[in-house]
Image: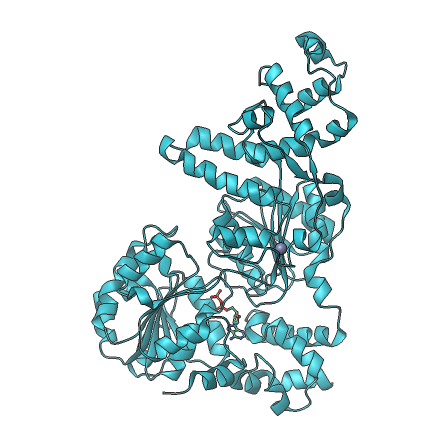
Length: 587
Ligand code: ADP
Ligand code: ZN
C-alpha cells in the first residue's frame, strides 16, 4: 500500500487534504465501511480516488448518471489515473472488461443497474477490488429526493465482498436519508462522517426584484466566468436568455425539459466547455453536471425550499474560488406559492409546506447574516456573522413599519378583502379614482389615512406581509388575511422591514472581480489552456483550474521542477502540459 499523502502530491499535485477528506481516507485505507456526507465542492471524488490509487486492486465506483461518469473518467485520466466507465454509451466495453479482468484499472465506473446484475457480479469475483464507492448514495433511500430502485439491489454486490471497504458518498444530509443509507448498505452507525455544510467561498445576496433583466445583466457584467440563471418556467428561460444575450453580449443559452433532447445535450456540452457562458435554465439543469468553475448562480424567483436553494446555489464555486449566489424575489412569488399550497397540496401536507415557505420568507426578509440562517436550518451552530453575504458586508438598517402594515391590513379588511395592492394604495392615499367613487370607498374610515411616509412603505410592507403569511393573494391579486394578520392588527406583533431605499441604491462590488484584479499573464495562461483544451477536446478545467493558473502567474516558475510544485500540477499533468505552460509563462 502507498501513503495516501504521496498519492495526493504526485497524482493531484495538491499539498494537503481539505476538510474531512483525511478522516474518510484514513478509514478506507484501514478497510472500514464509511458513509461520507459532504457538501458539494468539498472534494468527495478524491475520497475514493486517492485510496483506490493507494490500495492494491481496482476501485469500483457506482454512479447514477452516464454524463457524470464520463466527466469523472475524463478528469481522472488527465491526472494519470487509469479509469474507465462501463455503460451502454461506451463502445469500448470489451476493451474495458479486458483491462478490468487483467487488473489494469485503478477505477471502474459503472451504473447501478449493471453493477447489481448477476453477470457483472460474477465478473467482479475474479478481480481484486481496492474499494467499492457508491456515489450519490442518497439514491438508495426512499426518503431521498432521487430514489432509484436499482440502488437497493447493490446490497448483494457489496455483500459478495464483505472485506472490501465500502464508501457511500452524498451531499444530502437529512437524518432519515442518512440512517437509511447506512442500513441499506450495511455500514455501521459509527461509520458516518458528517462534514460541515458551509460553502465559505460562495457570497449570498438576496434582493427584491426591481427590473429583473437589468438586475441580472448587472450581475453578469460584474461577474466574469460561467454562470447559471434559474428561471421559474420554460417560457421565462427562453425570453430571459434572449434578453440577456442582447444586453450583455455574453454567450447565452436556454435549457429546459421542453427542448429537444439533442438541443439540450448540445447546450449542456457548450456550457460545460465554456469559460464565460450564461445558462438560463429551469432547476432541472445542473443535476448531472460536474463543472467546477461556475462563478455565479442567480435565481430569478423564489426557490421551492431552503434545501433546494442550497443545492442549486451549491453548483457555484466547486473549485473553491470566490463565487456569488443572487436571489431575486417578489411578493407575487409568495402569493403564488401560498395559492399552490391551498389548491394543489393535500390536507396532510399543507402544514409542512407552509412551514417550508415560512422558512424561505424568514430568509429573504432577514436583516442579519444569510449564511447563519442557512446553516442553522441544517442544524449547525454557525457564528452570528459570516462576513461574506450581503447583510454582513452592508448591514441594512431596518425601520419599524408596523403603522403602515396596520393601515394596509385595515384597508384590506374594510374593502372586504378582495382588492389588490393598487386599489388599496389608492384608498389609503385618498385618491379620487372612478373605481373608488363607484364602490363608495371614499366613504370608508381608511380613506386617505396614510401619510406620505406610510405610502412610501406600502410595497415593501405588502411584500413582507405576504412573505410571512399575514396577507394572502387570490388568483387576481386580491389580498385577504392570512394567519399572521390578527396579531399585527391587535398590536401584539410589530413589523420591521429592511429599509428599501438603502437596498435599492447601494452598489455592491462583485466578489469575483474584487478578489482577482485583471492580470495579463493570467489571461495568457488561460489562452494557452484554451488552445490545449480545444486540441484535446476537453473542457478547460480538466487541464488546470483557475486557481492553479493564478498561482503560476504569481510565482512565474522558470523550470519544470518549479512548475511541478504549484498546487494542482500532478506528475502526469506536468509531463503532458508543463512545456506548453512554461513557454506561455516565459515566452
Ligand atoms: P464534490 O464531488 O464533493 O462536489 P469534487 O470531488 O468535484 O467535489 O471536488 C471539487 C474540486 O475540488 C475538484 O475540482 C477537486 O480537484 C478539488 N479538490 C478536491 N480535493 C482537494 C484538495 N485536497 N486540495 C485542493 N483541491 C481539491
Ligand atoms: Zn453573513
